[in-house]
Length: 285
Image (cartoon, rainbow, N blue to C red; front, side):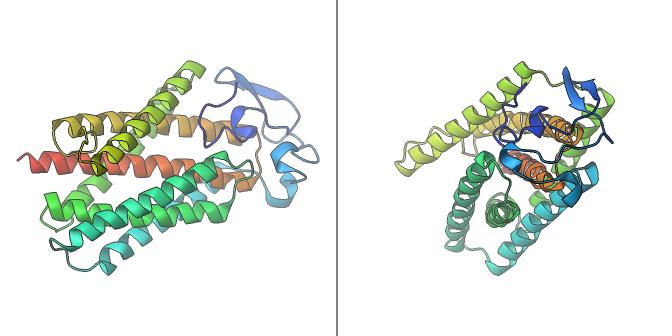
């Protein structure tokens, strides 16, 4: 069963097609190579002659480490962007939005490259994290200055909400043994692309003064943010499932970067939607 997620669809192992050999066990309706079975000399396909023995296998620890590095860069660059942009006034807030838009577009371009590369590139993943850091830092500061009191409380609330969403989703995924079906994947990925398409359309229409309000801070924007948050949580479930598939398939350790990239995309997505929700609710007070 092939993954519909563009981040993981280019990797055989994330789709249950690892070639580690040996006995298999069933999971989520698929058969995976068991841990500890002898690997074949090479992975073939996009891995070429890469061998498990030369760099080890992907594990939960390597995924956590690479994800920590990626998210750490996002946070550090976001903090640097916040500090280096100085005091916010009527003129500089426009600059923040432009800077944030530039980071978002650069991040989107890099995410497309990373999503469709057959061989994961750690430098491109880190470049994506830098672009996202610029976007997150500039956008967060602009939102905090516009809807908050420039004291960072909105941002802190969004960070806490993001941690809660990720932890809660992981707990639900493990404790309730959520099974990810093919239909579930297709619906979530379709919803994700639909949401992105609508948001981009509204952004383009905004340049001509005809925005519908999907990206705005009114009632429709609030509804869209809740929809976006729900999609982000569902994407996180897909991420957890794909990581489990990759580990079970015995992928090489370098594929941890692909998993880290997917998780970083989703976590930043969730953070932005929570920040928008808090900003809209604060603005309506």
